[in-house]
Amino acid sequence: DYANHVADRFDLRRDISFNTRINAASYDDHTGLWRITTDQGETIEARYCVMATGCLSAAKTPDIPGAGTFKGLTLSTATWPEDVNLSGKRVGIIGTGSSGIQTITTIAPEVGSLTVFQRTPNYSVPAHNRPLDPGVREDWLANREDYRKQQRESGAGILAVGSTEALALETPAEERQRVFDSRWAQGGFAIGASFADQGMVGEANDLVADYVAGKVRGIVKDPETADKLIPKDYPFGAKRLCVDTGYFEVYNQDNVHLVDINETPIESITAKGVRTSEKEYEFDALIYAIGFDAMTGTLDRIDIRGKGGEKLKDKWAAGPVTYLGLMVSGYPNLFLITGPGSPSVLSNMLVSIEQHVDWISDCIGHMGERQLSTMEAAPEAEAEWVAHVNEVADMTLYPQANSWYLGANVPGKPRIFMPYAGGVGVYREKCDQVAADGYEGFLLDRAPGN
Image 1 (tube, rainbow, N blue to C red):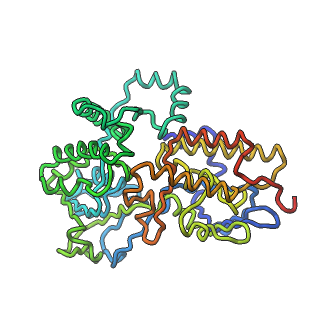
Image 2: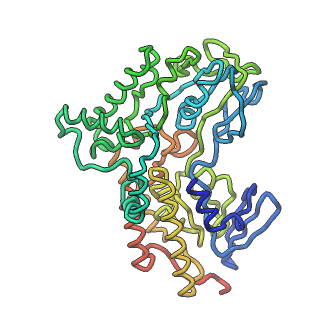
Image 3: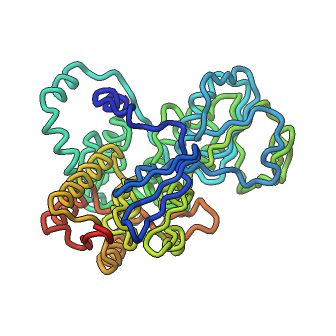
């Protein structure tokens, strides 16, 4: 709603080409311009190229043998059509990440039967969505600027979760339980920020993980099913924390069945449904909730070439490298919005997007005022930033999970922690300081022919 509001308020749609795919973007060393081609046969030349391609826009396609042979209705959570009627149907869903969980809770009350194929259980916490109290709304409207400032200076750009310096390992058990109970009741990501050490110290993380596991066991009536739904091989919060409305309660319905594909792997998709090592499941509809090639996927799908014709995909063959998540050495005037090396998917995305747009706009203005034509990341600054991003990640528990933060959900993708885990506020300060210091770490110059 907010994004639509902004588009309406500033009449942005007149400058947007909808239903258009970018095939290639190549830098011309002689003119200093980017040449962009589209699937509509258009060719556009531009001094600056800003890649607002999204971090979760490149949907994965199923690589299961027989995919495409199913004769029933095939759906993907990434490309969900309008007006789908699943009432009374036999439905199978593959995947239990964020979109899978949201889909499961939405369709479970209406389908005839629902079979959930789960490889990796995910931590999920209740949203506890509720009507907004009029007093809260009035307070936000009256203090909007202050709250927005707090968002920009916070850890994740989300004020609702709050922050704390208290340590779980130094908090008495009774008080710790009270904090967990309060955060659970608050809903959303609040419990993910219960204590300052839970994302960095394994023993502290175990405490919140055990609490959440206890909640799952208290909700799901069948002990065996509950056990399958509880993660055991990665820390709480090290993968994208899911937020739900009645997810675990769904498994108490007689029409919902959980299949652990670690025990009975999927062998193939058939004309009738899904065949595992145990049996064939027949469905009227099959849903793929298998996620995205995150952060780099949309960029990889465009043939991006920088100076000397170097392909960005080749430069990033061992993992993405950027300076501040904003630019890449060898790719003048190519800006990234919430790119690898920025808080990105670890933050309130709109807060981070706005910060990048403001920074890039100011940067282009700076170049225009000084009659500068090209800007790119200096190789040494890029290398130092990548090392810093890795250093910060290694201070946390994030690398201990095979998550899409590291590209682990895409076969053959390098295992590199891609987002910056240092926090929205800290990152903003670094970006602002770089700009204040004359865009330190960037190479600014005139392009050939100017």
